[in-house]
Length: 586
Image 1 (cartoon, rainbow, N blue to C red):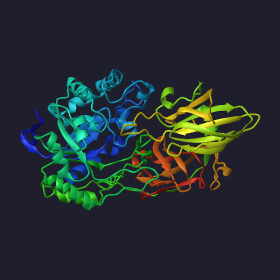
Image 2 (cartoon, rainbow, N blue to C red):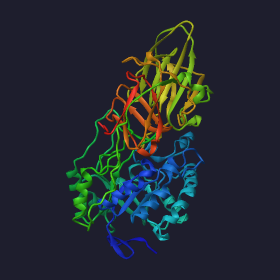
Image 3 (tube, rainbow, N blue to C red):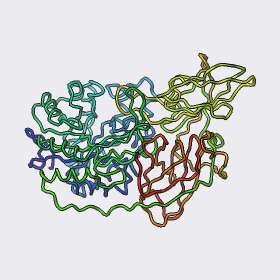
Image 4 (cartoon, helix red, strand yellow):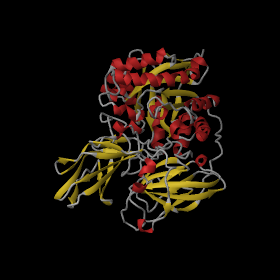
């Protein structure tokens, strides 16, 4: 029976010491058709292991409804890795962080406002148990103890950065063991006293996460774990981007130097990331330190493979370092994936959001403007509508605790935008006959790390005029999972004037493909919104950047006619997009 064991300060596999050289690839951020390509490149770089998180919200998007196909086919991803001779580390803790929506937790957990997350709360653990009952039996045949490639699994993720509930951690450990998980179990935390104290579990290997100063980090780990193999479970060799910030990069030589320091310490390593991929759909997460910071669609991470799978200078710099510690065969890479500029795509159809409400949602009557989770919605947008009696002069409209960005319309006309990070009130005079108020709120991604993760979306407190709360609302959930029911009319010329704010609208255009290749959508002249290709949600765009193009993997294209649908919140000065063969991440 093959098994990864700890002997002294070494990992031992099948009786032989093993230095784990691993890279992170998240199956749910890469189209399945490209899994083999990315894994082949990981092996070619000199790695012997691939690591992946498991995103609960991918596998149970709605409570009790499980998904293990398409982007969720984790079993196939692991099987391919095994076929290529790679070991696999799986991190199926309920929470993953990963700059992923709500840290991988399903949004529907927030419908129960009394539930406590990531601790020994029975209501929460009942949901975890049901998820584990579905997930872990799928992973059990793939364990190395059953002839598969999985050599180790994580109990919880960086828990010491969040809490200190050892009863909870031990419950998760026992929950995995009870379901037949008999491979090496581990935890991972930052190399700081409070993190190690809060996150370690008796009898379970602790690993540490960092981006530099390996000697320091491992010295701190040794204070708490005097014996055992040293491993950096997350070597942050790049970084991620938020909207309204600069694109992050880290020099290849800096990454190589930090890796060398780790290897000189005799440590094992997992690169976070080896290949970042893409936050398709509405699955980007957000941070909240001083203010709310939503993550962009690209998860390129400035790492060894680009978002579109090309080796970067870091790939070659890392391979050069690894070659001094392990015997590497001659570099052989898969054929490069072609990229193609398909040119300009003119939008020919338009459908105003307010005209399409009955095709997109069912109205809900509510005394208060409830948040998304209370009306059974996970992602997307939500519309709150009411009538205000008049006359009233000199008042301001206040959206109390909006999450995350709201467009306000008075009698159908744009009145202003309220943002979570800029919650300014909007002056609003009400005529004698009263006024129709519509507030469209975008969920820009739930907080994925830290103490502010209980991040309900929409209007979470109330809407008031001055100090008077407004009641009796029509709520329309707009998850926009399926936009096929939209009824498009001809393009409206008056909606395209430069700088003119109009009501939100969907735009449609088609283009022909005779040979499928990767491409990149550039949206110059557009403001903010979401792009769908043949019904697949590619993710968000926003003119504030840094990201200026959206990645389109070739498998999402069809030979023949392809349909683009763009949901634009503010109107466009140029109702066309460009399909280019080069990306622009800022």
